[in-house]
Amino acid sequence: MRAESKLCYGPRRTQMPGGEAAVCNAHSVDFISAISHPPLPQFAAVPREPLISPNTMTKSYAQIVKQIKALEAEAEKARRTEIDGVITRIREAVQFYNLTAADLGLTVKAKPESAKSEVPAKRKKRKAAAKTTAVAKYTDGQGNTWVGRGKRPQWLRDGLAAGKQLSDFLIK
Image (cartoon, rainbow, N blue to C red):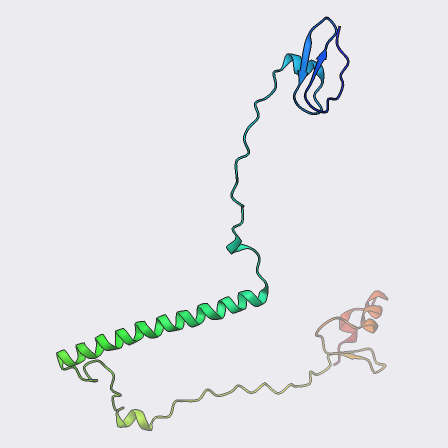
């Protein structure tokens, strides 16, 4: 016979039907489960690190802009320091090897006289072709005309639907 399932609100010793004693160690556990399954061991709480460190917490836009400006200033300072070191090494090498600006390719070479007189040819702008008015090729005799380009006008479509030929509208 199965015992009736009841809710338990703390450790309790209970007499089951048939004379068996049961102890419930967890909340919301029925008595049959307490007898057939021993209570689970209690684990100590393990401290966990937060998933997001305090340094990467969300920042406001103004804080991010301020941080960007500080990093840009730091980067410029580091760049200036490196440039100063490079310039110093270059000057030492130039002095040691007695190099000139011409040796380094830093002089402006005079252009030949013929090159100076030549003016680069300017591109000529193309003028748009003058639009010519197309001559009418077809007419219906009542003042309507068509040059033969584009969609056929309604008067021509009506005439063709009435059984006339396109050559009947041709201007001679």
